[in-house]
Length: 202
Ligand SMILES: O=C(O)CCC(=O)C(=O)O
Ligand SMILES: [Mn+2]
Image (cartoon, rainbow, N blue to C red; front, top):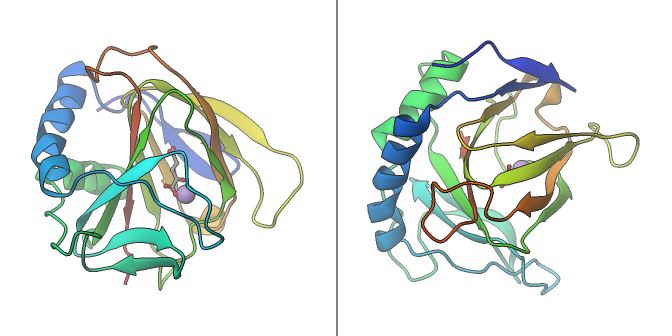
């Protein structure tokens, strides 16, 4: 679906990869996942509450608390994470062409004031697998830096249905979300932004 990807600092960005009905279908597929594994507010290893709320699907879910950043087989409530919906796996297959499927789908929810500071995704065992991000709902200002901390950055607004592949030489490139444009989309009934990140964690 959609146009050819644009490239920015090694990230492949598919604007409008998912059309409106596909976005709505994805939200419907995520509803039972969020019911089985409710969003929680993570705390950094230093004890700071993150502004995003999160949960996961798949065999492993990314979590953070006082004990550190890591993948866990269980939601903080002690239940296993729900399976990654097929519609989500189809996006991974479509943009990566890989046969290997991700074993983790992090679900981030950004309310009006949520952001995510520049970071690398580096808790996975093998960086040769890409990370795929799917945006739904309100626009988010995505900042892309370098493979080491600091230096120049470029920013691009990610809209609902946009898909980003972070792989190859850019697999460890710093990235983050500076802010969202709350209310810019009507996809989610209460507004806000959902971002899915698909990963081969182990
Ligand atoms: O929300 C986004 O677009 C990026 C999320 C992200 O980088 C992460 O969860 O590691
Ligand atoms: Mn990330």
